Amino acid sequence: MDMYDLVPRKQNKSTPSSLGFVADEAVRQARRTGNEIHDLEMRLERMLTLCESMWQLLCETTGLTDAHLAYRVFELDSADGERDGRKKIRGSKCPCGAMVVASLRSCQYCGAPAVERSPWEKV
Figure 1 (tube, rainbow, N blue to C red):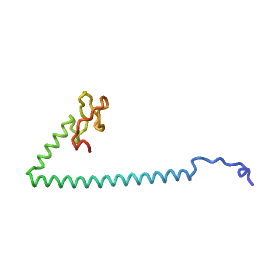
Figure 2 (cartoon, rainbow, N blue to C red):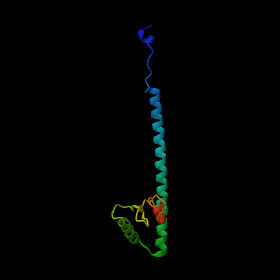
Figure 3 (cartoon, one colour):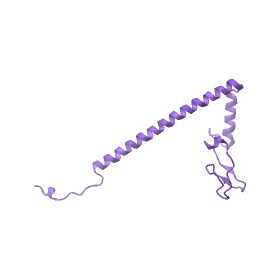
Figure 4 (cartoon, rainbow, N blue to C red):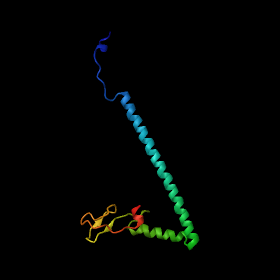
């Protein structure tokens, strides 16, 4: 019998089995995240199809053109003072003069109900 066999070995907390557990959990999380991204991509594709279908119906029934749409997109994009391809939602002004954050239902200063926002700002 060797002297090494008589000395109790101290367990290292980062044993291969615990590292395997951490690695397995990371793989599971990566799969979940990948599935969530895939689901979001599918929803986005469906929304794009729906929007394009609605636009085609509007064009057919009203005589609007892609130029009309492009101009309106330009206007909305420019309305927040920054041409970046999106419309920022900045909140609304309360009668007390404070800016109410878009996610709040009432003024954070005086408690008055927030000014009704358009349905698009609630998305």
